[in-house]
Image (cartoon, rainbow, N blue to C red):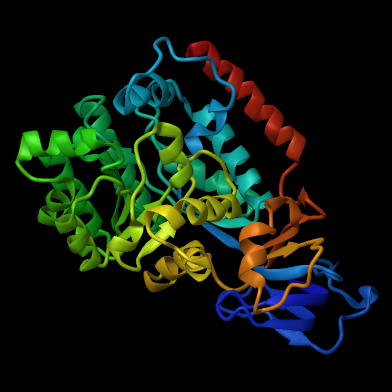
Length: 425
């Protein structure tokens, strides 16, 4: 299968070099798109080949979401909580923990299909997800995998193991994780946050991650309550606790948020191979504070924390906020936006090769070149400009329409499951 891009303006995502011409993109893993002298005549194409006219369009590598919560997809417009939350822990208790406790497998399927659809249309072809459904644990990861595969999106999944719903739910989370790692190989060991994870659970999770050459994916100091709890129970702060348990030794480990860290914790992070994922909009929405991520080294990537599926939007937010919190510049924001590619490549994860591309019809009123691309990236380019998306060499979005699944049927199923979930809430 080959996708031919006719009259493309290709922007190399690493060098920002512009090159014009015709391109051929194939499904063979590891193959880079190649420039060709001539696009084949339509009558000479194989049945699965296709031509996309890219005249006056930009072509570049597609995007990665470094931290998602697909289980929150059906939350849009849901009923208000029974109590108005007065702090972050109450936001979890009355909103998100109430939602995840009421999920069943069909709701999870609907959430995954709809989230994958939205990701695809926003140019996101790889998602690192953090899932929770404490009373529908078994089979949940495979179900999400199958849903993302059906849409054509690559993924790195984990289940959010926690002690907050009792030992049975905790053990099911550990078993679901091990089963998934055994069967599918590519995954992480998820934990909710330090304040909901006992020493026994943390130890078991790190042991599991080491046994399967994986890493830990956990929320860290998103709110001060996480640090307060850790100091009270263990007489240490969260990053030190994770370091003592061996979680920071694993280069696949992802630490979400990392807002309320002191200088010692920042130094521990900087000297470890672990990664931090920044979710600025979620932090602002939850009123938990902002961080100077520059203190933590270079292993910083961007996520959405389940608020949406638009990584261009996340990049703009990180830049706007980062000017105040850490003095971030244009190139720093772009590098952070693209850092997830390095995380995936350095750790040998599959699904983010250079045959993942996004095509944008960008009607700029001014010239766009290598020298000013970053200004357009931060102040011009929007997901609304995306017309076509290629994932692992396959055209999954064509003329803004998903090609792999019927959109209306997929969203209709999500709406049906959303209503059923809201009734339970």
